[in-house]
Image 1: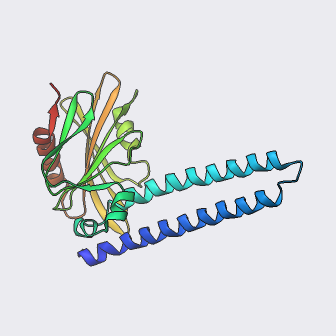
Image 2 (image 1 turned 180 degrees about the vertical axis):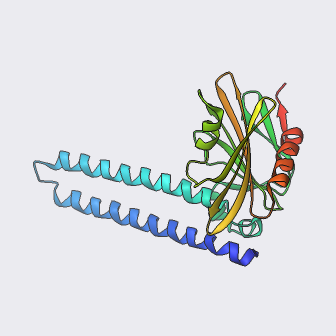
Image 3 (image 1 turned 120 degrees about the vertical axis):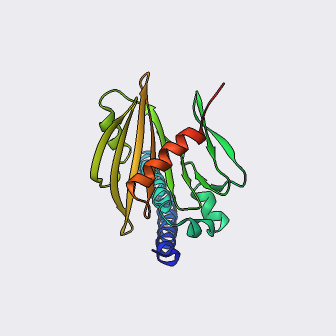
Length: 232
């Protein structure tokens, strides 16, 4: 898979986002004109409330859509993401890390993001951050309150994907899950690790379109050993 082939979905996603923004602008503009036409109507207040509710619903739907598109954008190649213009990177909440940088993961741990990696944070309720390394490895980090089967918790963080070839393995105090998913007609292998402690489930998912499961497992163990640091 070459970078040119991988980069095409990036511009398709960007174009879709622009189209949605234009549609929202037209909805707001139409609502504004209708309010002016009905200013003398006895039902003006009810109408305004209804229009305001519709606008808010549209904005919320767009926010959810934008977050999904931003997450899907993360599956483009590293070179394609690295050449995005600043405005697209800002809207997608991408940052290129020029030096080794520590970011907060939870109240007791920090994660080191290696230099030249791309870091993304959509401020999702459970997604603490995502990293794209120069070799194309995608790393997703979640942490959330959880009670129940750790295997189900692991699957829940990938609920937006159609998981295939799922296998679970118990490793010491952690639970692992290997799987495959398809994004933009490209198959990605994944290897995830989960830790449950005091009702907090921490998960790390490692995904690549070129590495096999054994390589991903090695990447995962190396990352946790070298990049996850306890706060003292």
